[in-house]
Length: 400
Image (cartoon, rainbow, N blue to C red; front, side):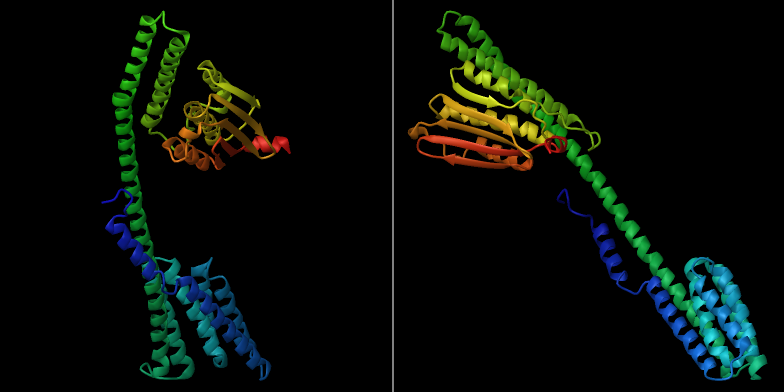
């Protein structure tokens, strides 16, 4: 299984949750019932305004409307008020239907917010109230459709509401199950990443660092043996020994970083920064390069840009030393928002670097990752690198 693939259980849970979530939600049903209640109240008020008004019917209607308005926060209290209104409407039968409709709207809210036992008890009480009201007020028999339709209506409303609640609970359970599966998978991924980081750290320590240490030892031995060698030879050996020691130090920091498996919020150590550029220039001058350098001080960069600035200068000067004529110019200066690094050197046309080496690729990747831009201009007689890197936010604010 690919390391970032989702487990089948999580995928199935997400698909099922997405499918069941397409059905109307209880909130949408309640909004629909709000509209139905508003229409019922408006119609009844209009009817009473154009006929002989029944103050008892209007009072029952007002009770039912108040119950509907407070059913979301005070469900059982609203149900009690609606049940009383349903009983009182028997004294004003002309308003029976809109009041009973408001009562059913309140009954719909009970299963969504109360336990199943309470829901059943409320349904029984309301059904009995409506059934007895119909028999006593309309003078019909116990088996008359007018009397039986009211309990059936109540049972249907409560049943639909219960099914919607079960549907919502099922959807929530699916989502929780999928989330738990994804959390477990994420934990497994992090464990595998930590194991891979430890493996890379061991390989760097056992193979790369060991070989670089051997280079450092032999360079030191050669420096002692060739004590009478020309200054250029001794300088090269000294540079080899210093460079290998610096590589060992940076490898130690990289290995420590790879072995650190703590939280992602820990800051990454930056082994080399823009503040080390002057020392870098000095090291290249020590091996015979002529470098015209103008370097601004107190450069406040983002962590990624700070490391990228050092590496860009290091790579560009290395290329100038290998492929150039032994001279280079360096300009490091900020503006309002960015740091500009300009390195230019004359080149030997027979050894012209075409910009396709791994060093230049790595340089471009570092600059891009830091949010900057890289422009390389390679000509028959000159090679130029222009880099822009973002300043830290506080540095930009200070300039403005």
